[in-house]
Amino acid sequence: MQATSSIAQQLASIVGSENLRDANLEDSVCGVLPKFVVQPEGEKQLAAALAFANEAGLTVIPRGGGTKLEWGNPPKSADIILSTARLDRIIEHAWADLTITVEAGCTLQTLQQTLAQHGQRLAFDGLWPKRATIGGALSTNDSGSLRLRFGPLRDLIIGVTLALPDGTLASSGGKVVKNVAGYDLPKLATGALGTLGIITRAVFRLHPLPRRAEAFSFADEKFAAMQNHIFMVQDSQLAHTSLQVRAASGTQPCADILFEATEAGIRAQESHLRKILSAAAIVPSPGNVWSSTEDLWNDSNKSLIAKITFLPAELAHVLASVQRAATVHSLHWQIVGQATGIATLRLDGDPAQLLAASQQLRAEREASVGSFVVLRRPGQLNSLDAWGHPGDALPLMRAIKHQLDPQNTLNPARFVGGI
Image (cartoon, rainbow, N blue to C red; front, side, top):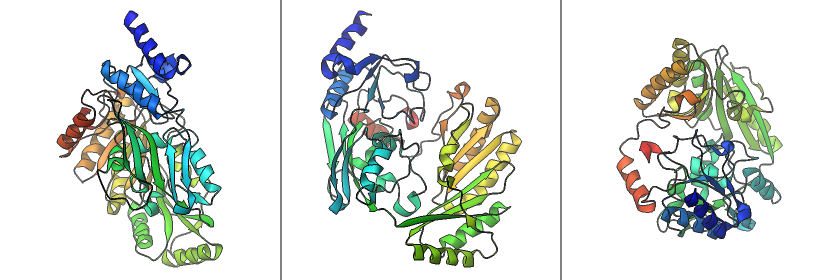
């Protein structure tokens, strides 16, 4: 008790007592309850608090908006939640150069609203933009349907500042779109789940907002026929921004395609689409169609949600394998797949059957140059590894982790291979 009181006093001396509190059940990370929640005012305070924790042998869980805190494996231990909620400033918007520098705790919605005033955007449509933060989206390597045209976040980030466990604020990259000199820390930090350092700020390249946007949908009863439709669209001269497929138990698969252009440009694209897919019934898409992935997370915490990666040409095979596994194990399934070869799958049913189905699907994906990463599972399945086989890169990943976080202070055991 005396040791805990001493830790609290020293943390309070760094960030102020008003920015330190005891953790409660809502702060649990995959069932592990931390001792304190710390909210630094700026990156120097955050780095100082992290350095103190590292020196004291305390483990730290970085947190932004908390929307993806359940992703990854349960931490081996969790002493401190280090929040970036107060690091929420937009530092510099160089609108003429199409770049922006923003602190990690800024929400996606706030960033996009600011950019829209200058007719610009970060071409990224991640989950839960009202709450999700820049740092959290980068750390989890989140991506949406805009990835097809603009690439993932790791292609949009051009600079980053990380607070390392020893208190160093390390920066890499710059404020120009072309930046190839030095160690590529921005891409290294993207998708690392906060295990190498805590992102405090990032620099992104931007894109203009489109004049207009319009989406269309088409369906087919068979997975193979839908795959052929996708091939025809991808092999055409259509300039589409997004292309996704939705499917679920007892329904026929449906594809959605998004065009961004002038009014005349969209009408020309629509005409070409109808000509290419002359046998398909093409209709305007529902207004909420691009939030379909987010909708998979609604209703129940008893479902299993996974991110599946695959070769784009394997889409029909993936849909068929999911349907087959769900049927064998008496599960209800829903999936939203992107033409880039990434899909989000939701399975509902008995936990034992969820475990068996996920193991079957993971084995199939890993045998076919893909992956099956569990993003959410019922509490009974907390022991299920989120990541699957780490591949040949694990020794290199461990070496980088040891170099940047030798005491395993940040998110211990949450990442691939128990990193």
